[in-house]
Image 1 (cartoon, rainbow, N blue to C red):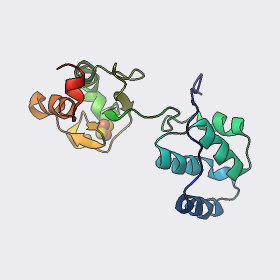
Image 2: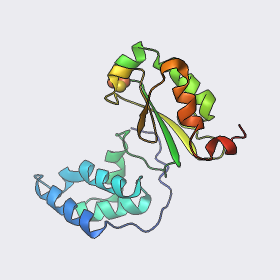
Image 3: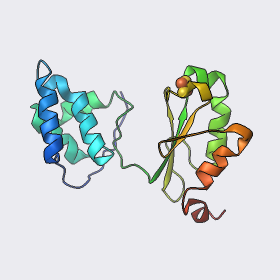
Image 4: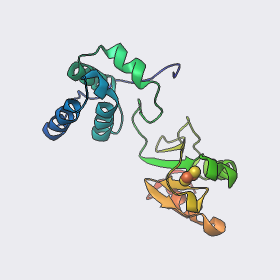
Length: 175
Ligand code: FES
């Protein structure tokens, strides 16, 4: 389990009517409400982009769990975010195929270009880098996504272009 989940306070949270209806449909397919915890948290994260303290409270209420039970279970899973996302996100695959094809070196380049590294956003707080498991892009390993788009690093310029070309970002870094 993660040693600590920051989970800062966010805005008041409740599901949109559509999501609440989807949540109830999904919960009804599980043997108990509690068993639907993980997919419910996916719905939360899908709505807000992260899981705040208020969202945990809301999910716990829906499932009939305590907030600490939800936090304890959710903390095992790296796919959940407990802090607001940065504006821009670079995902570097560390899966086996990518690891064998230079993922570590590529991550160092990403850090150099972006000024961010896993666990530490860029100085202006607008860009984050995370290592993720297989992105499903093994054919182009080592694989990277920038703001959700796969980026080809062929020729060594794709990455610089994709990260540096993010609107306004390169200027803010003074490049
Ligand atoms: S292992 Fe990296 S994309 Fe599949």
